[in-house]
Image (cartoon, rainbow, N blue to C red):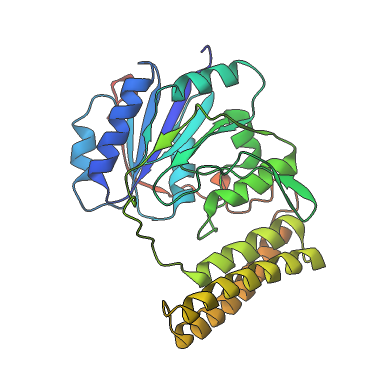
Length: 306
């Protein structure tokens, strides 16, 4: 395509999967594709392994473990007209680059596709849903390509969000008036978690994130609190069935309920503060422009500089 692509890969202590991810990008994308790895802070030899490769243009070390800080760091260092974000455990499938090239030759704001394996939903983004009366097409931060002008208008990702981090960006994309396009050919896959195991849910962070993004983007309206309450009731019912089946204890169930309440209260309060801190349609007081100290070390091969 005429427009240059930058691929930003976020990694944390997952060297072997990262190397497979990089191999996939190198095989699928043309040589002029810019590849940026944001590492941090890993302790498994990732830095040395990446620096030995000649297909990574920029390796940047950060001290903050959150995914949105990693994505913002990569976006800030990228130069492409389109920026694609990948998780390190995923390998792009054949047709991934072509789907991006074809889409962004036309008028595409955001493009996403299936995320197979790794404990994520592969169908997320296929159909819009409605949140507080606004149609939202949710995309995964582990497989999404965004036009640079859209990222600039969004001021990148919100670095406050503790979990389900790209969902907030999905809401803001819709709020500003951009469109999300789904393409089944833009697929990535992962073998992580295929044994049926599932990481324990941090209920406090989950509901802190939910309360934050809803109140930040929509304000303290009754439908916002109704949405949170309905979500909590569904999760409580599902967890209660686990207690009945002997998969959890009543004490754990009650403890999780307390975490939900505490997380919701904290998220709603912080969301209201964020809403009034940025009253523009961007709704991002914790974006790229909010700080300049993300990178600890940068190894840059572009123009012969490292």
